[in-house]
Amino acid sequence: QSVLTQPPSVSGAPGQGVTISCTGSSSNLGARYDVHWYQHLPGTAPKLLIYANSNRPSGVPDRFSGSKSGASASLAITGLQAEDEGYYYCQSYDYRLDGSRVFGGGTKLTVL
Amino acid sequence: QVQLVQSGTEVKKPGASVKVSCKASGYSFSTYDINWVRQASGQGLEWMGWMNPKSGNTGYAQKFKGRVTLTRNSSTSTAYMELSSVRSDDTAIYYCARARGLAGLDYWGQGTLVTASS
Image 1: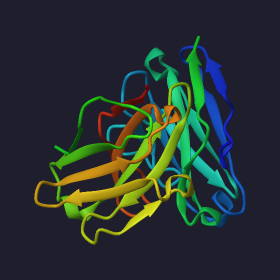
Image 2: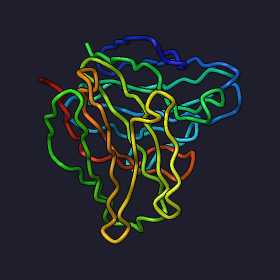
Image 3: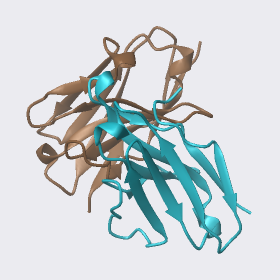
C-alpha cells in the first residue's frame, strides 16, 4: 500500500464541491516536502493539477485548489463538471525511501 | 510546444527485456529530469525512477533497483527506460514525464503499453 493515504472514492453532483484528502507521515508530508496533485482521466496521460501544495499551472481552472498542513494535504474542487470525473493522485517524497517520489493510492471522483 | 513522444506498444515473453523510448521536443532536453511512472491495470500510479539528462545521474525506486536502467541519447533528446526480466505483473502502461528537481511532473508522454505474456 501507498505511504500517502487517499480515500478510494468521492462523489458529488454537478455544481457541488468535493475535497480529497492525502494523509502522510513524518517522513514525507510531515518532513515539509511539497505535495503535487494530478488528474488522470480515462484514456489520457496524467495531468499536473496543483504543484507545490497550492499552485495551479497555467490553464488549470481556479475551481481546483490545494492546501497542506503538517502531514496532511487536500485538494478541493468546486463547481463540479461532468468532465472532472476520473482519478486524482497526490504525490510527494519520502526520505525513508531515499527521497523517492511517492504517489497516493488515488481517488476516483464520480460526478453524479 | 513541449512534447514527450513515447515508442509504441510492446509485447514480451516473461524473462525478456523491454526498452521504451521518450523523445523530447519544444524545450532544452538537458534542463529537466525525466521520470518514469507506470500504471498496471486497475492500479494506481507507481514511480519508477528519474534521470538527469545533463549529468546522466539516476535514481530508482527501491522496488526497481537492479531491474530498471535509465539512459539517454542527448544528440536526439531521447530518454530510455529498460526493464529486464519482465514478469506478468509488469504488464502496465509506462509513462515518461519531465520535472525540475522535486517540482511536479509538468509534461507527460502519451504512455506505452507493455504486455508480458507467454
